[in-house]
Image (cartoon, rainbow, N blue to C red; front, side, top):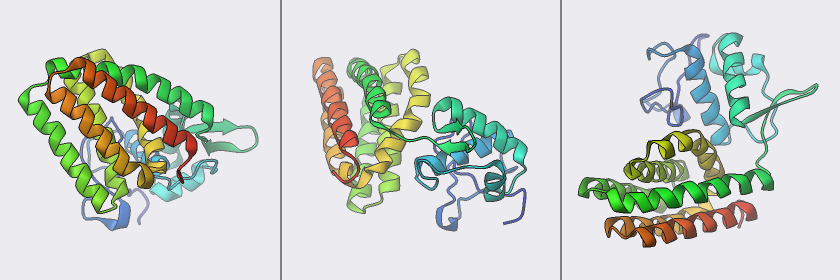
Length: 244
């Protein structure tokens, strides 16, 4: 790939729109400069994606030169993107080693799920009160897509749909503070889920059905309970490790 070119998958980027995908040279891959976005933002989205999808493993060293070569860009946007992922908790800067991919240890996972439980139970309860028929249809479509992806063992897609459903419930809740607080967190939720997606996917899908059914019924208490049970089950699986 020529220097200055980089197909960017912006599924998690937040800074960008669109759905390009690098894996396997898919036709949807795009080139930096093809979007009217800052180069740093495009590098940032791709760097996040590679960490979340495990292309860059936990504990792996990420030098500016290596990333610049990987992405086909200069070191400046790489340096800026590394600063952002450091503040987001994806990368640590260690003495004499420089930037390394962060490790999801037990404390990090427990902290993440403690926050998830508070946010997601509130979101599900509010969504049960505020969801329209169109909102419920949207959630059902995500469930159907997740079922198909699980059956096909397309766990990259399952992980994307897992995050998409949770973010949809938060959006349907109509609480802008929940949406704002959750935006950064769901990069990490996706990361944790992807590590054990093969084991969690069938269980997660069934737990999501219960949440969506409660929202569709307009039952706040049931939606809150279903969301809490789902987060607790996900936390137990994450703490047990991807082979559980």
